[in-house]
Image 1 (cartoon, one colour):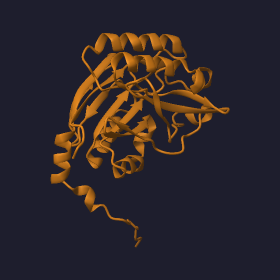
Image 2 (cartoon, rainbow, N blue to C red):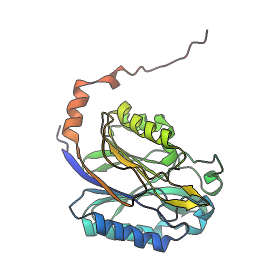
Image 3 (tube, rainbow, N blue to C red):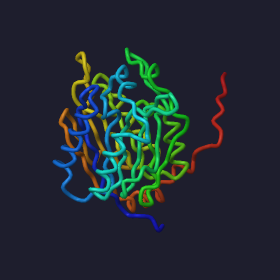
Image 4 (cartoon, rainbow, N blue to C red):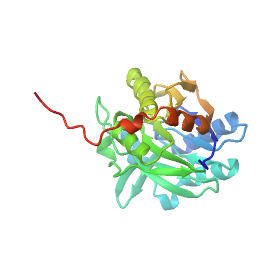
Length: 273
């Protein structure tokens, strides 16, 4: 097929310090230095790792792209490790508007894409939609020949965005999250389902640790293959890297043998009786 055969990926599970971007950058760099010893093609970070999952702190941490400390840091890491960076997300300010945004940088440290979270979580006492606005479209990035679909946390509840990526040719799906400890079953089921139903690798990365006021992140980051098997994971609150080599040749062979996506109908009109 002329496509790359594999990618080595490293996803960093971490416990962010709420409201302290400077300390979170220092912590992230230490974790990367400590846990990534071998060459990797992609480093992935979790949602709002710069500020922690506390929407009331979002706007105070907001950065404009042109002078972003976060982007400068990620660029330095990309060049140092000669790898792509899926930068989790930070709060991006543009023309007076605020977004929960995932930056993507290439091996040269150049910013090549921005994806802003399409679905905002504002339930069970969380009010993300009060402080940021939703992005307007999915964003897929070509990473060394592998088309990669980007999503953030609550997006996982909307299979439509993942199917749109798959129809557009995605081979890898990524969800960067700050997922709550009290919702283990949705995290377990939906991250696996998105991989199975689209026959793609799925990287489901979430923060760990205490948020505030006895609210905790789940701390269960994992890498799932195109058949739904978990090939690497961190099951607890531990901070560090979860790594895997993704074999796309095997995935393409599986797709050729199991062509279930060809059975999708153009129309699923419901008949009520």
